[in-house]
Image (cartoon, helix red, strand yellow):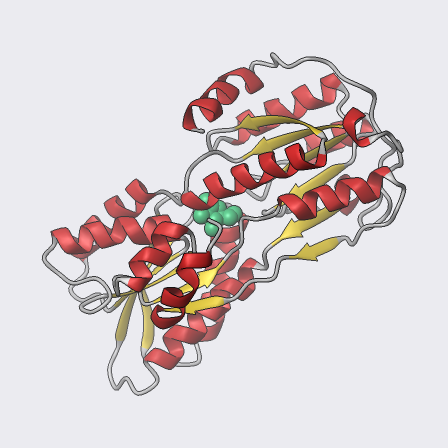
Length: 332
Ligand code: AHR
């Protein structure tokens, strides 16, 4: 998988992909995104992925690639290595090739209007998956399918608020943020802050980006352990950064999950294992399995049917006990 992604990363942005059929009609959000009405095996979709920064992303890529294979729809896939300029190049390449649809998960929220306008001018409908763009012109994309990241932050905040409801003194929280400017980093921080503000004892004493990577989480946590006199809880915007924090906490001679509690978001395999081992205390689920919904949207648009402007993914939460039960049946 890694090797394949690497090859695509180099190839996709270099515009080395073959040309294909013409585009569909542009669409208003929620409206039918044009109806090429082609046999599915003649449809071509370009997907511009963020990168391979986390277990979540790897699972998301695998699910999307498998879903296209199962549906018999041709997928052109590119890995932007967490760089917006690479994603923009990949989208431009898909426009040049005249794909039928473009789907992408924007690495950051802003800065997309120009390239999305180019897709619209070329009559190629764009589907946002996983992450939103911050654009006033919602006619630049047909739909946004993925999680409600604010709700995820709130769920994390609710667990923390309940866990410390009897606290008589300050609970010192450090936050490991996702990629700066990305929708999940912004929204998970907002949702969490909205909930914990009800208890003035809950205080975020430090907050810094770990870029959604395990190495980033470890590095930031190491620095925080040195700079903060007291840390009671880590709120990490994804499992990978939480797993990096566990390494830093153990290296500092403390016990993760006990001396310092940890709450994360995602519920990917390694995070769930750490939860069952008691090293993480609570995980808010964020499902990477968006492939089937993406295929469903494409099929509807191809048939000239309407799609919802916003499709929200269903997801839950896991305590340590719930993780033990759920882990054997998890798909990722
Ligand atoms: O956009 C989804 C987030 O991106 C996941 O929570 C994180 O693990 C990933 O890198």
